[in-house]
Each structure stands twice: as C-alpha cells, then as structure tokens.
Length: 216
Image 1 (cartoon, rainbow, N blue to C red):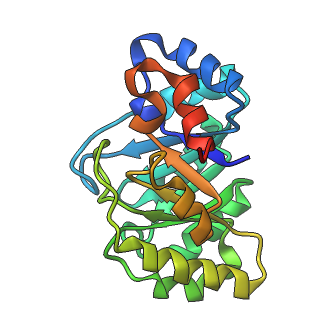
Image 2: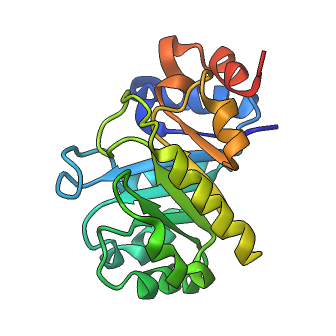
Image 3: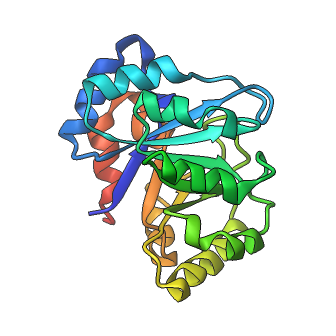
C-alpha cells in the first residue's frame, strides 16, 4: 500500500479533530506538518502548540517539515512537541551535517529537503546522517501549486544515490502530488507522498485517499 503523508496545512482547522479521525480510518500512518516562518518562505503557518496537541491526541508518525531559517535553534523544542521525523532545508542552515546529527542525537529521524532548483550534490556528504530525503516538486510556501516536471530527473538521481548507498533512507516528494501523477512518481522510486489539497479537497478525505492509492 502506498504511504501517503497528508499535509495538515490543507485540513479544516475549524474541525481538525474530525479530519484527523477520518485520516486514521483511511489507514494513514504519516502526518506531514509544514512549519513556515514567513522568512524562509513567504508564508506563515503553525508551530509548536499545534504539533503538541496533535501528538497528545493521535498516534500518527509526525513528519515535521521545517521551512524556517536557522532551524537548529529549535530542534529540542520540536522533539519536546512530539516530532518523530524532523526535516530541515539544505538552503536554511549553514552547518547542515551538525544539524542533522543533533536531530538524531535528540531521538528523532533526520531529514533534509531540497528546493526544486537545488542540486542534490550536497547529499553525497551527508548520507550517513540521513533517514529521509524530501524533494520539493514545487517552490515551498503555498499549497495548491502545480507539479514541476523537471524535478523527475532529480528524483531518479536521488533514488540511485540511496540505492547505491545501501542505506535505509526514505525518499519523499512534496508538491503537486495527485492521483494523475502518483503512479509515475512511485515508478521513479518515491517511498512517501505528501498530499495537501489532493487529500483534503471538497472534504472528501476517504475518497481522496482511496484515489491516491488506486491506479485504476
């Protein structure tokens, strides 16, 4: 079964508990939490209080994606809030290896994210410190964007890097994922699919999740 990580940013915050319960009934294991600071990306989302509340009341694997500058300042805070996976952007932290090592030291899985125009060359130097690689297939900051097709070649190259490393690293894609392109992405070697509007649109969560998992 395809592992879908619905993005909380697209949920109905007026009735968040109901949306989360429906995701659980749909067999969802991962919940993607986009944290934006208004500096690294031109938008502000939610922070630690929301994550703490979700952690207290659910057993999802909390896949926290930090779209913030200098994320190393807050690693312990996100650990205490309940993050299971903490992903930082290669573009947002100067001492990337140190940051990833500290995430692991705190007991979380360490992830790195690359923007669409960022080369994967950095990954060669940090493979020993990674549990997850998140490829952005849109420019981060807003939901509902169209998938950038040129990212497919990067996905292929990163999949090859992971396979050749023989490490247990999750390859995740975020941005513009929908039922029309998810099979192609799976064939490229993606393990985990972030879905925002594709998971929550029209409040038809069960139907949407089913469509993302069904090739027919």
